[in-house]
Image (cartoon, rainbow, N blue to C red):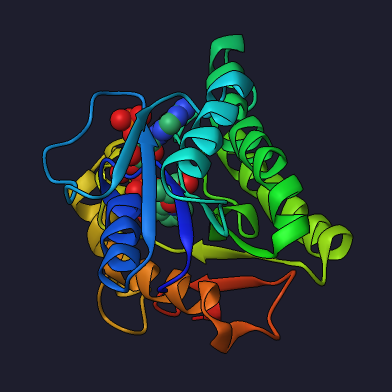
Length: 242
Ligand code: NDP
């Protein structure tokens, strides 16, 4: 990763934190962001911007700060995301604004902010989608749809901005984070729901944030130079069949 200037959104915890740590350990200069203050666990030389990716001005500020402090952004990992658990019928206007704001507009904002530089100098975008954007999770209608948006945007960027920019999406399955806990919490019996979900994983375990960081690092590297416009599922075999 030496030579990469990376922006990773949502690096305060979960998958984003693991991606930040992996890219930093591999030699990238990294900036990350979240809506709260700088987390204590961040390595000292990882830059932090307190920002909401749903706000276009904040997105522009994230990219401008990275360029000024670290150099032109060559790698963008759109990881920040929120989960709203509701059916279409039960979704409120606020649910829509929150979910579409972060999961769709946030991804769009950051891509739009980095593309002028990337189109000139070259770059890589990795968007975090979800298997939920392909196989619907119950009671997560807006979330599922938001991830399908991310998948389609990924393909469009690859088509419109190649060969200078490669753009792929990673589609995680159940990864042990705060968000996964939120997902199980809506079940009548969260413990039984966890047990049932685990039984449907051929690898016999849920994923770790590091499992996703590994494939992000590979997609960012030159080893993946022939991969663009694709959706890479990493779900322990959950969607392979039963
Ligand atoms: P977490 O809830 O653990 O972390 C989400 C991160 O995103 C936090 O750092 C949060 O920081 C940040 N964030 C959320 N909204 C915003 C915003 N508007 N602006 C800036 N930062 C924001 O989630 P995960 O690590 O589990 O999820 C990461 C990504 O992976 C998401 O896109 C999610 O949809 C996807 N995913 C996760 C799966 C899982 O099983 N965990 C499965 C499939 C996909 P803060 O709250 O401080 O702003």
